[in-house]
Amino acid sequence: MTVNLHRMANGVRVVTEHMPGLASASLGVWVAAGGRHERIEQNGIAHFLEHMAFKGTKTRSALQIAEAIEDVGGYINAYTSREMTAYYARVLAEDVGLALDVISDIVLNPVFDPREIEVERHVILQEIGQAHDTPDDVIFDWLQEKAFPDQPLGRTILGASERVAAFDARDLSKFVAERYAPGNIIVAAAGAVDHDQIVRAAEDTFSHLEAHAQVPVESAHFGGGETRVEKPLEQAHFAMAFESAGYRDDDVYTAQIFSSALGGGMSSRLFQEAREKRGLCYTIFAQTGAYSDSGLMTIYAGTSGEEIGELAELTIDELRRSADDMTDAEIARARAQMKAGLLMGLESPSSRAERLARLLAIWDRVPSLEETVEKIDAVSTARVRDLAGSMAGKGAAAMALYGPVSRAPSLGDLMGRLAA
Image 1 (cartoon, rainbow, N blue to C red):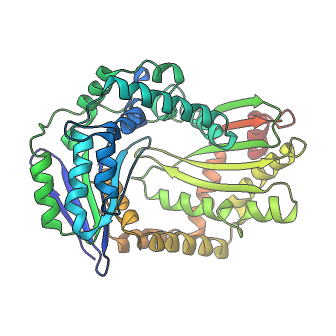
Image 2 (cartoon, helix red, strand yellow):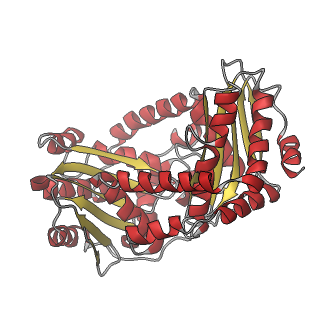
Image 3 (cartoon, rainbow, N blue to C red):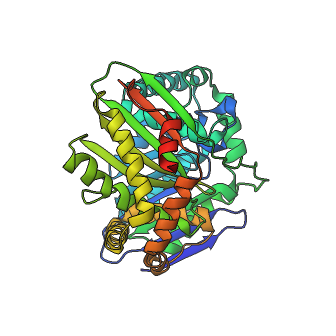
């Protein structure tokens, strides 16, 4: 399988990977216009814009957009993250041209009909309400806000209800003008695709866009702190975050292996100690997420109000202990899990296209799988221990608690225990 990259004169990048033996393809348009690219008064607008893309263009109604893809048995969707908005489809090989035409249409030619804005505004406000009613969703928004306070990276992707309630067509158009610049656009495709065909279609569709200066993105600055919301729920929800490596730092692989060994599966330390040995919880995990210039190692668990204190202290104890006695066997297992997850995931053209776009956005190139695997293999037990120790030694963390959490220790108490 070969990755092919084409750079258009105006800055749009086209990247494809042909996967022999497949009858289908995944393709889409990825735009570097996510939650962290919003000013405070725009918070939530990237997500609102994603919703509006499917509500009609200059040539297609909302129904016609859906029918164009579903009439050929395809699938179309979109998502907004903190650093990207993606519009993508999965279709059979013979319908790749149609899919790219529909996706480029919804990206470049949205109508922003005021009636449709009101309909979708109501949908998004319902989505926000649903998130607030889902403890293990909202707790991560609170955690993000504490980790990156008073900056775009710390704000919720959905936005605050009062801001979403005020957005109009001018606000949406202004965000598009600011952020949907050619240099921020990547067309990615994988599966049964022909690179030259995709390039010709992209040139026909995107070459008229004029390049313009990029609006600077505010750098990430980890803060930390505690959010505690007492509520009579069945479960006490506990989440902690420590600053970790960004995508451009090779230590991102160390951090991912560390979080996997600490709480990434049934054999991990947290799962074995908290659930299997002590029965303190049903769900507990650790994971690492990365951004272009920072990242978070996050631990989450749900337990009873009576046991939240014991669970929180156990979590800190395992984190502290891992800096001293994480074993070669644990690291080898986590390394194998990471490589297997990567390689198994890339058997899907959707995962391949996503990887192409994400890596191109980060590196302006697509590192080979061999290069990525080499970096994973290079992570040593000593480096993982050092990372665990430095994470614990920074003295800064974010914590969010929700539910019957009166018995939970404070963040200060936990950080004191970590440093002991």
